[in-house]
Length: 146
Image (tube, rainbow, N blue to C red; front, side, top):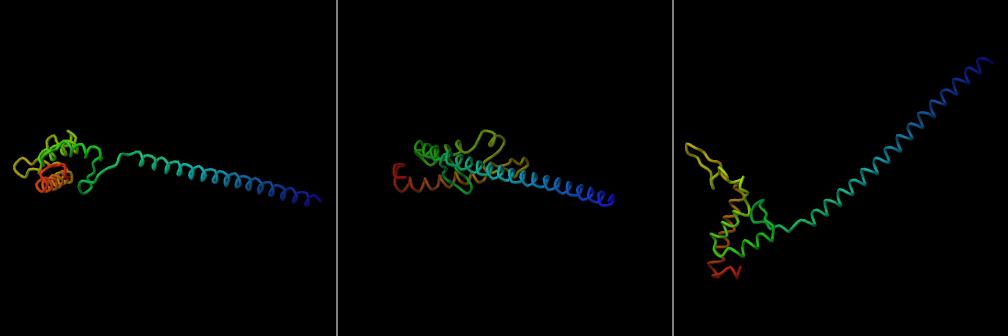
């Protein structure tokens, strides 16, 4: 009888361990489900915020390879620029910050004192827009036709 009671205690102890581990496992699964729900909710919130930010941004116009300018600034620059030279100058002022041009030259220098050039993508975009403007200006005689 003692052996049976000892075995019963062992079985009960093992059952208690199984129940405890099952409870821990269940709690862990519940935590994982809650964390997954939170991650999915945060992902949804992130996507909504990203979409809202995208919609609130001002429309941009591509004026060269990888070079964009806000539509309102571009239209203002075109409106106040009555010659290709003024357009180039106004685009230059709109695209570059002072820090980007200090100590640099338009094309860079190769002589004894090499000077780094300004961002070539922006520089080429300004040249392209000015050439386009020049052709249109030359063909139609005023910026009104552009």
